[in-house]
Amino acid sequence: MHLIKELLIVIGRIVTILPLMLVITLYMGKRSIGELPVFDFLVIIILGAVVGADIADPEIEHIHTATAIILIGFFQRIVSKLKIKYRKFGHLITFEPTIVIQYGKFIVPNLTKIRYSIDNIFQMLREKEVFDISDVYYNSK
Image (cartoon, rainbow, N blue to C red):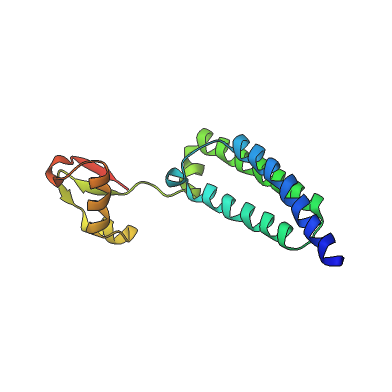
């Protein structure tokens, strides 16, 4: 009987957290996963950890999880606005694009700096239907 009660609590938490997560995610703004800045990626990881702990452990107060989700969403939104308003702030919490190809030639020190191989770059170029590196005037990653 105790197990059934705990399972019903978990189901109830999932049913209440999913709509809240959807609303907060829409509030934070939509971007594809590949375009996520580092800060936004960390926010997603934190949200997942908070929600996962809440669902897995019925001892955690559900209202605390809901409050944390809402506050994380607001915090992310504030940081996003600050990044737009203050460019230097944005540079502090995100990675700058690194030029890896210029005038059809690889800039190997920059590839080393960002830990990308030439094969990684070729794969990305093929995905963009670029098959000849000399066609690339300027490319950053």
